[in-house]
Image (cartoon, rainbow, N blue to C red; front, side):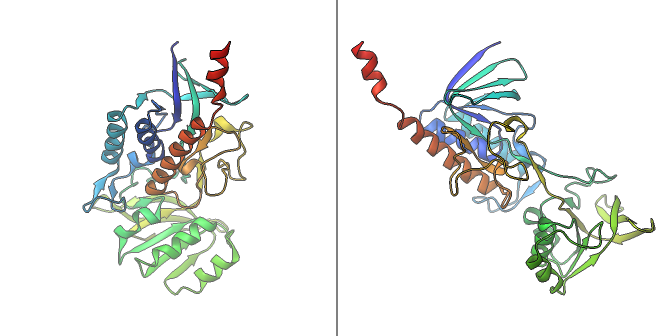
Length: 323
């Protein structure tokens, strides 16, 4: 077992983690980033990316994350192929984390950038057609379905918001919900019901996503939750909008979480309830969930980590010298 020490320990390697590492390394914090189970985060399973600033042409998600990693390492970040399985935040800094490898990581500051995963239905065709008509992010992929017929699956705020967003690109949006009433806020429901581009299928559960001859999504098989009747709906795109699961299991009982499991931070700041511990990206952001906002939060976390270290007790060296 090895012990790795750093001024800034980063758990997670998506846009938030890598951006924090870039800024931390440039501030001479000698960051260590522990990549986790999915190095690069959700972008590694995203194909075409059109909305990340700085790229006029379409880029690939995995390539973008490779570039972020290379940049972080170029300026001095140490990248560790490990997964954190235990953290010790008691007593304040330094903070300790144990990897699946048995290695110990000790950081004077800690940036949590473990991200979140979209919840999936777990039905046939869903994963096979991911990126081929099936998506979990309308903001990310809605642009690819301009003028086409799309469906949104879900009944909460996320589903209604995505249905409304998709009307910017499509005149034929269908919301599919397994119940006969929505769980979203009333104001969102009113906006959706008033939009002539959106229709609703009630009491319908998705049985499978089916591909056409070209290998992309052609229709969805539905089952009526009351009668059991099977039906189909032809669509070009389908957006699963049943929520996200933030990767915060490690921090339950150690840091405050909201009702949905996201890490709580101070308003407008990545600072958590423990001084020196910061949260960045989708692990604390249930509103925007974009690569660019995650990167911005990673930058904020690194800058605040640097300030935290600079504000530490400067009397300690003098006291030691006087002894």
